[in-house]
Length: 234
Image 1: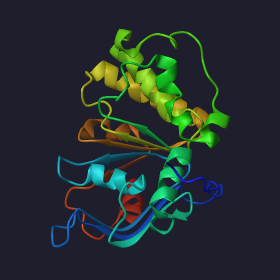
Image 2 (image 1 turned 135 degrees about the vertical axis):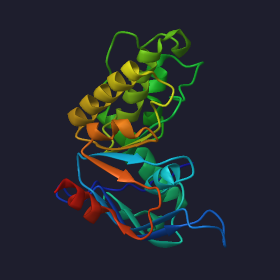
Image 3 (image 1 turned 90 degrees about the vertical axis):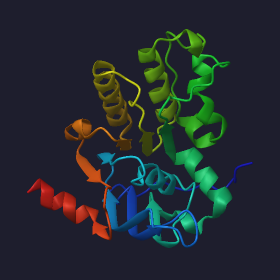
Image 4 (image 1 turned 180 degrees about the vertical axis):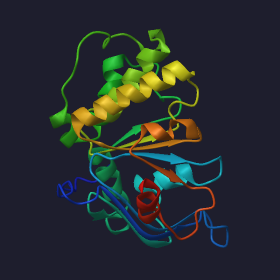
């Protein structure tokens, strides 16, 4: 059961994501996977996180979603220190404020499209209250959908109820180039409509130019990512 505790969103001018002196290793004595001095992500930004397998991309998303907490440093999302609100509090916070898109979409085959889309609302009264449903293919089984239609359902499920942060973990890895670009265009449109911040992970560096900013995790040690991004833009 998730906590009944509720958490307000961030102030309009505050970063949606702020990492400070964050270090994370999966086990005591093992190699540090994430080692970031500073990373700020503004409201509405579309961030591309790239790096090969094992570079820490999915670990970073787990930190942002509060599934794990760092051994050192602070991860703030919408102004809240995730380590300070406890496991049940993080479950509630994640349900209320974060939408997820997974690599293989992770649609539930025995549910209809509408049941898949509204699934997050069953865990969050806040998002249920914000939700607006569309018509069309909603009552079909997901097993009857084309890949393009599955893309739209996955995006709709992540964005239903207007979460402030959308986390996409390699959702285009199994798609061809045309479908990949179509999905990203759809995702950008929906995030802009909902004024959501997007953190998108991929190993495909060719897509980086489509985003507001790219973060390279390979070999990243105590890097000031905000500073690197500003330097790269000059």
